[in-house]
Amino acid sequence: MNSYNVYRNLLSAYGPQGWWPLLQRNSWPGYSQEGYHPGVYSLGLTPNERFEIITGAILTQNTSWANVRSSLTTLLMNCSFGPEYLRSAGHTELAALIRSSGYYNQKAKKLKTTAEFFLQRGAANDTPPSRKELLAIWGIGPETADSILLYAYHAPVCVVDAYSMRIFNRLEYRGSAEEGLWTYMGLQGKFHDELPADVEVFNEFHALLVEHGKRYCTSRNQKCSKCPLNSECRFVEQNS
Image (cartoon, rainbow, N blue to C red; front, side, top):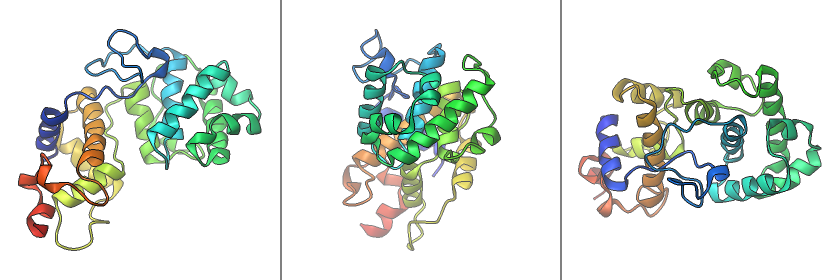
């Protein structure tokens, strides 16, 4: 299945998603109460808004966005949010503020380490760090690094996550185990080869795959009969 065809089908089915949500701009014109901004791409981020995205990318590891939103709301309400605060806050204090995101002791350490990195390179520096630099930070893996590059710096990098793995493993199903058909870098390479090298497309594609994975291509009890991709899905062909 060609990635660009998937992108067009999902965009037609769901419309623009407005990622990455910014709680600091909730209810602004063009922004929802939760900070989503469908069709708004030129954000002109302040350093603290950029760091809200970076913080969210770390907090969302192994948890739902609802839990992350709760943690971000608490951070924004209870401290002078920004990398300076996250670096200087006591570990116990920070862990308590992000408790709803789970793994809060590890994530507090990740946030402090990441804040130190961005302060050292200049909090107002809007030049993207390299992927290699991000991956060298303790606790940041490929998905988190690519999310930071795409959403916080608008770099043309496609993000791969569990939803995209599941969807494309099913689209190209071979009648054996779904897991393991794609590696992170292999699927990202497919996306980069088949999609226009456009930040807006990469932004929407990642968000649309997440939406599709939540609505229809779920891990269990998938709703194949209503899926907008079912006419070209090999999983549907072999399991109908």
